Image 1 (cartoon, rainbow, N blue to C red):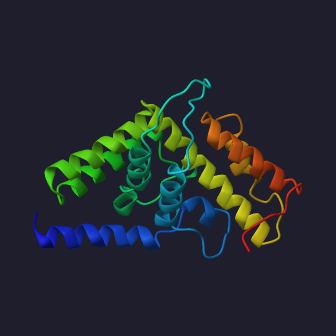
Image 2 (image 1 turned 135 degrees about the vertical axis):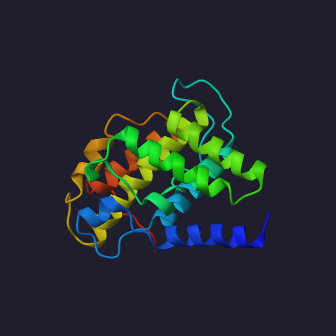
Length: 196
């Protein structure tokens, strides 16, 4: 591990601190959330996930793994940018670009660390484990939570409805489903609670 490689990795992480999320930019949101802000909230929320899977049976999620996966899932965007379905890039091409970017990034890191990051990204993309499914739900939940915050802050009810519509019926994790139900109540005006 060379210090120059770690500094290059730090610079890539720094890009994510300033890279606005494309969906908000495309919808005219001023001062939009950054990719790193999105990943940070997902990582924090992963520590709050319950221990039931979508069938209601008892399971134990590896919350540390969920947190790490949350922090890694958009790492490739430091090179390829935040590619959304509205960018005109196929899902297959997006995955190809992101995989190539991650292959470049992990060369900067100690082998075991790089391999872990790549494996977490791949697991997330393949949605092959309970943790990956939970983190996918966190990804979507953070998006609609952010949309709600913009609608409320900008006093523009429902102007980001397409974000909510795109996630309807897609959540599986019981804990996240509870959060979604509460968010829907707040959004409909039943509950106006927020941070003090």
